[in-house]
Image 1 (spheres, rainbow, N blue to C red):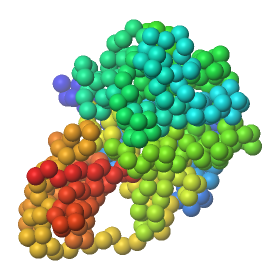
Image 2: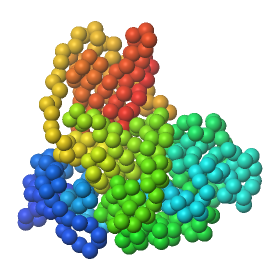
Image 3: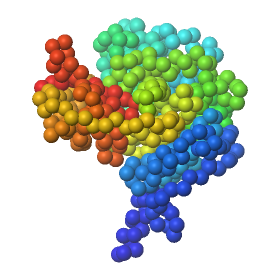
Image 4: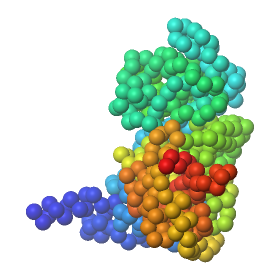
Length: 468
């Protein structure tokens, strides 16, 4: 019984150490040089504080940061950190889920660069004449390619509000339909395209259909010829729908080192080994905030997320590909940095932000000179009482409750509780167990009453409106 119990502990440990026991301490090692195109260097040679990174890896090994499968860093064009956990290694392909969308956008950009697609103002219905009985085609909806890329098509689509198995979830309904393209083209247009962000897997599936119709190749074939082969990516998989369509919205699997190549391609403005694979213009348009009023972040480009964070008194901007469960490719141009994190943060909404917090709390601070941590202050009880109440997160309909307790606030959101301590009259900091730091800023209306708060976690800023 004792041996069975011990083997169970070892099996669920992030990494086995000496004699096969769970490893708790960490000693940094330079990544191994292999024939995959990456130059190799060390943390210290590239000006990265090793202690911050050592603390990060120890937190993962001791399961204070849970379910992390890999962490890779590329600084100044060189791979300087490569760590794997829970039996994963450099040869393991990871399904990228919605980070696949960013790769799909790259394929669209290559097709635009090569004049296979005229431009992003092309009307979508023109690519699907065989679907003449659908609403988009029959009514000639004025939805352009750029509206698909920026998730602003204005169609009736509900995703994040309900789980995929719920009949009200549009992505789940699409997956259960016989023809995914037809399902999307039959959605009603309920507002002016380009007006508002509304996340939709269906729009990225249409991008895959447009790639096929404009290039004569399925997305996976087009990617192999024009993206993966030039990058030296030879091992990948891309799942298909029951109808045979490449699942461009979430189906791509890559090795972490190859995920880093996608990020570095964009960091270098579309070049790999001095070859221009995609235009600098497309990279620039893809990675700037085309839509800024998004539900769970700062901004959205062409299937790339945009983020920003004040770290050590420096305002750092990043862009990133993000997939369900915590599959992230981060690019920080100001730090000449690419970071890849894969994980298994499923069935917990807040855990989805854990890779972002790893970037903001550990990785980016390792690139910068530190500054003193802000101290907690005292705030009058009557002011604290103004912050207490119930708040709601926009279209997701997620509730947040705040109560006052002495000189701090108790915040409950997504089933998690966190204590928030004041550092300014309207700003509170806290630490969410197993995830990391978060910050709440409260805002008043013209009458001086609290009407909303912004919860900053990782690079995302979640707006909760006060409802009572």
